[in-house]
Length: 230
Length: 296
Image (tube, rainbow over all chains, first blue to last red; front, side, top):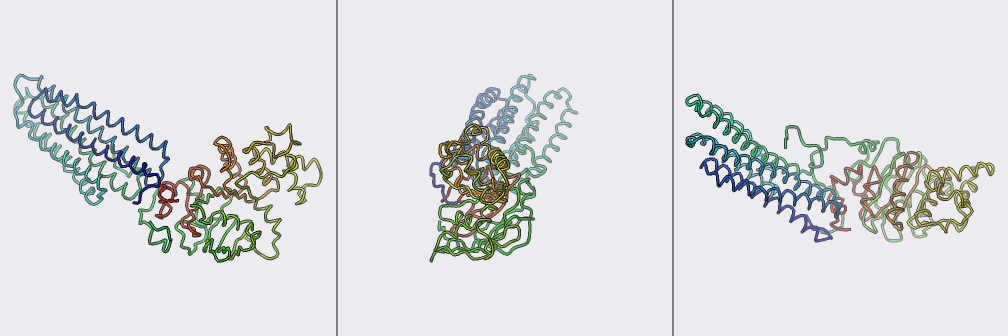
């Protein structure tokens, strides 16, 4: 679309979108680091993830401030308003992705402290597989958001069901481990929470992908379709 | 981007139809079905005024091109568009103000309560009482506040005696939200009031002859933000009793005061719709480009 008469407004909107994408990259990295820390039983790496969470909060606050300032200063309407509100929604989902990463990191620290010996690696097999799926979804969703690629975003939305199925399978598998070795029940519960947090990352990726279609069709300013959770 | 409009439909976006119906959209529930190039619903149920295929020429200049639109009762419609788009020209057709311009030629049909206002038998003075007008610059008569209001009812023979006239003056000033400020100095000259008060005096003057429609041509462009807010508040109250057509350069004002918005561009009526729809999800690219500040 052609630029605004007030050219600085174009720059402001562009910057806001770029900030959201940068935040997305950072949140994604946080999830990957947290899962790695969990899988390696590396408490230091997990603590690092928690320390780095401040930047997620800072990104979210900065985007919110800039959004409010743009609305107050420019009184955007129509597509401009849609774009700006879209960034705010993406930032909300990304902040929650960041929260999920922090939660996984906390679990990693707890798991490391809970038993003298590390839980067996096969315990984390499902965690890693689910994390690969969910972070893959998030990466794709952000890319779709960047390009406003509606077709591919529909594909991303479809993949959320895969993550849900994986979660069910992982729960079963963990259950069999615990039946073999009931002393592991504490570790298992922590691991289930981690799996659940990863599943939420997939949900937020789905939300962002869902937003792409609504941004492109410009229906964002209406009530969200049924079934979209945040 | 070329601002020359050739085929409005080519520029239309395909959109998923809205499923939610807003309160404002409800006010523009469809009237008759009309073939026009305008995007959106130009007709309303039970209109007070209708315009059909209106064209205006100033000499060789084609200022208004085949414009058809209804004006609904008890609601505010805003005309927006870049300078020279024809919105004021069209507004002035609604009470035959263009008759005063020698080179202007108006064709097409405009009705008020079903009667053709361009009919030869139509009394133009009477018409302008029924379709009142408020201008950009407040233009009180160089007379007292009282006389500014009393003049219309008197020449139109709407009152029988002085007490009746006093009452009309008081209620008109009350409706215009000016009574409390001027009731002790009705004999002072109207021109001695502040700009915002003068504009409300002009609105009171229009109301005094009991119009059905009030046309406002950028009524706030010469006022400060406080006076503007008072006029906007007044417009919202007045719509309980009158149909209001407002031409404004301030899109925020159009969004604030109107229930329907019409977008004009180079003499064409491009899009008409519920105001919340126009400002959130316009269907025509030209409307979108204008309201988002991409040209104008």
